[in-house]
Image (tube, rainbow, N blue to C red; front, side, top):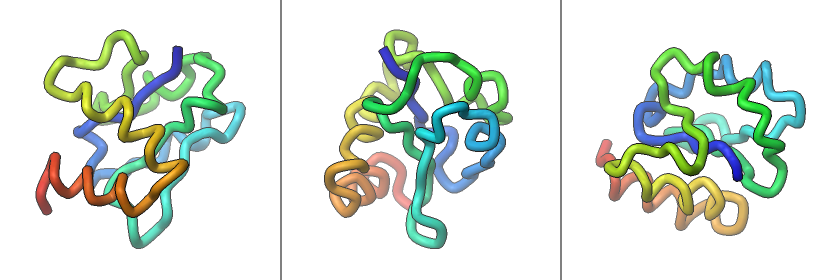
Length: 95
Protein backbone atom coordinates (compact mmCIF):
# COMPACT_ATOMS: atom_id res chain seq x y z
CA UNK A 1 0.00 0.00 0.00
CA UNK A 2 1.03 3.59 -0.53
CA UNK A 3 -0.27 7.03 0.23
CA UNK A 4 -2.02 9.17 -2.37
CA UNK A 5 -2.33 12.93 -2.79
CA UNK A 6 -5.83 13.83 -3.95
CA UNK A 7 -7.71 16.87 -5.27
CA UNK A 8 -7.54 19.16 -2.22
CA UNK A 9 -3.83 19.67 -2.98
CA UNK A 10 -4.47 20.99 -6.50
CA UNK A 11 -3.46 24.66 -6.66
CA UNK A 12 -2.60 24.66 -2.93
CA UNK A 13 0.61 22.61 -2.88
CA UNK A 14 1.54 23.17 0.76
CA UNK A 15 4.86 21.38 1.15
CA UNK A 16 4.70 20.47 4.84
CA UNK A 17 4.38 16.83 3.78
CA UNK A 18 7.61 16.96 1.79
CA UNK A 19 9.71 18.01 4.75
CA UNK A 20 8.52 15.11 6.96
CA UNK A 21 8.84 12.32 4.39
CA UNK A 22 11.72 10.10 5.51
CA UNK A 23 12.30 8.68 2.01
CA UNK A 24 11.74 11.82 -0.09
CA UNK A 25 9.02 10.25 -2.22
CA UNK A 26 6.86 13.38 -2.69
CA UNK A 27 7.71 15.39 -5.79
CA UNK A 28 6.57 18.07 -8.21
CA UNK A 29 8.13 20.34 -10.81
CA UNK A 30 8.00 23.88 -9.46
CA UNK A 31 6.23 26.33 -11.72
CA UNK A 32 4.73 23.54 -13.83
CA UNK A 33 2.71 21.19 -11.64
CA UNK A 34 -0.52 22.12 -9.88
CA UNK A 35 -0.27 19.39 -7.26
CA UNK A 36 2.25 17.19 -5.47
CA UNK A 37 2.70 13.49 -6.25
CA UNK A 38 3.70 10.50 -4.12
CA UNK A 39 5.86 7.87 -5.81
CA UNK A 40 4.15 4.53 -5.05
CA UNK A 41 7.42 2.67 -5.62
CA UNK A 42 9.30 4.73 -3.04
CA UNK A 43 6.58 5.28 -0.42
CA UNK A 44 7.19 3.11 2.65
CA UNK A 45 3.65 3.58 4.01
CA UNK A 46 4.88 5.30 7.18
CA UNK A 47 2.03 7.82 7.23
CA UNK A 48 4.20 10.74 8.35
CA UNK A 49 2.86 12.95 5.56
CA UNK A 50 -0.85 12.51 6.21
CA UNK A 51 -1.23 14.53 9.43
CA UNK A 52 1.03 17.31 8.09
CA UNK A 53 -1.26 18.17 5.18
CA UNK A 54 -3.26 21.29 6.12
CA UNK A 55 -5.95 20.60 3.48
CA UNK A 56 -6.41 16.86 4.19
CA UNK A 57 -5.36 15.82 0.70
CA UNK A 58 -3.30 12.75 1.65
CA UNK A 59 -4.89 9.34 2.14
CA UNK A 60 -3.80 5.75 2.52
CA UNK A 61 -4.43 4.07 -0.82
CA UNK A 62 -7.34 2.01 0.53
CA UNK A 63 -8.93 5.10 2.16
CA UNK A 64 -9.07 7.51 -0.77
CA UNK A 65 -12.62 8.93 -0.94
CA UNK A 66 -14.65 7.59 -3.87
CA UNK A 67 -14.77 10.96 -5.63
CA UNK A 68 -10.98 11.10 -5.74
CA UNK A 69 -10.00 7.52 -6.64
CA UNK A 70 -8.68 8.74 -10.02
CA UNK A 71 -5.81 10.33 -8.11
CA UNK A 72 -4.40 6.93 -7.11
CA UNK A 73 -3.20 5.95 -10.61
CA UNK A 74 -2.53 9.63 -11.35
CA UNK A 75 0.15 9.81 -8.64
CA UNK A 76 1.93 6.82 -10.20
CA UNK A 77 1.49 8.14 -13.75
CA UNK A 78 3.47 11.30 -12.99
CA UNK A 79 6.60 9.20 -12.50
CA UNK A 80 6.34 7.65 -15.98
CA UNK A 81 4.57 10.34 -18.06
CA UNK A 82 4.48 13.79 -16.50
CA UNK A 83 2.63 15.40 -19.41
CA UNK A 84 -0.16 12.83 -19.26
CA UNK A 85 -0.44 13.27 -15.49
CA UNK A 86 -0.65 17.04 -15.85
CA UNK A 87 -3.36 16.68 -18.51
CA UNK A 88 -5.35 14.45 -16.16
CA UNK A 89 -5.06 16.95 -13.33
CA UNK A 90 -6.37 19.64 -15.66
CA UNK A 91 -9.21 17.37 -16.75
CA UNK A 92 -10.17 16.42 -13.19
CA UNK A 93 -9.97 19.98 -11.88
CA UNK A 94 -9.88 22.64 -14.61
CA UNK A 95 -7.89 25.76 -13.71
